[in-house]
Length: 143
Ligand SMILES: [Zn+2]
Image (tube, rainbow, N blue to C red):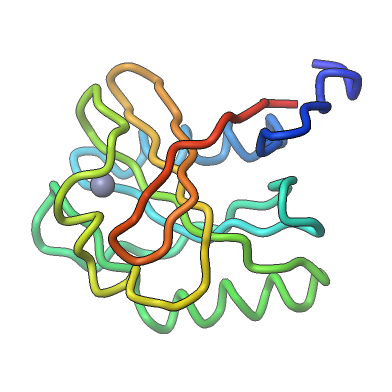
């Protein structure tokens, strides 16, 4: 896509390389879920996705490796990117957040973050603005 497609007042823009990286990580992780952090320079433009090891023993859930999470956040800092949020995948067809996603300890932070959920079977990618239990779907433009 061209840069002209990267416009939209109320949408989050996601670099196509980020979408590809999430899709690749999700496919490689099967049957488990993939997870990682999202970075970018502004609040509405996601330019980086850094994978973090999933330590969950349940293939239908994810638990980011704490050390991996720390390393990913440091990598964002070194690249002078802001932590914008997180991503994870679902092995099935639905990219809607599960109850476990909404109630996860991980989401208890006080800041509003982006959360991308990618569904491997359907290829759907949905972006949410999340704060605690409150997840609101937001428009996304892949550019
Ligand atoms: Zn989930």
